[in-house]
Length: 254
Image 1: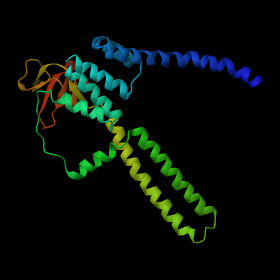
Image 2: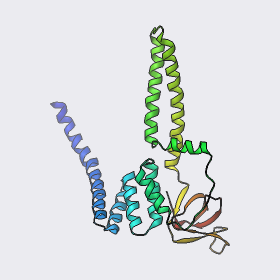
Image 3: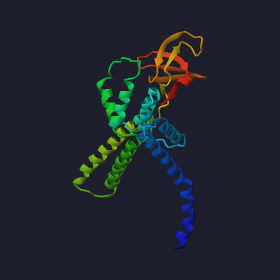
Image 4: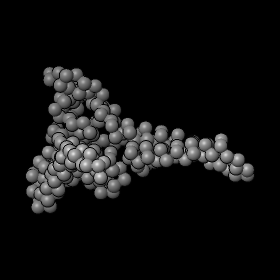
């Protein structure tokens, strides 16, 4: 009873510090959903964006925000949020379908050769889980491998010894494979070198200067790789290899 009395103020303080903000963020998310259901897409965007600025970043929120932007005709910001949702929910069919649908509205149709089949298989394997899922699987496999090794070193298992030795080795090798997949997925989820064009159209120039030669035009919704930064300019690369400089205000990083 005395311990409970000592802990009660701590529990109450924790609830005040952490419980209320989380409830407030969830309220914003739910109000955004209600506004979306009422077809008040502008209000739903405002509520979703406010939740994001307060740190309520999650796959469902990005997905719903993408839907709201798509309904208002903001294809670039819709694709931006679908791409963010894909990073957190890579196997969600609704997210991938809506992203594919939104990309149909992008004016820049860039044909690139399909990747080598081994690269496609690797991409599918990496996208089976998010980074947290791969990290959890690695922890379980490593724990099993270490446990098997500890049993081998401390117990006389007789005929079972070769079996457990092989199983522990297999689990150890599998954990190494999983940590490699985790590394790939983590880099994808935290990559800061990709962005989406949010302006209707922007000229890509030969140098980070407004008077420089125009190389090509990119349109809203186009996904680009960011190669370099020069004050208010970004050097971008399209999937077909074209490179140029654009004002940073026209791009939002995924």
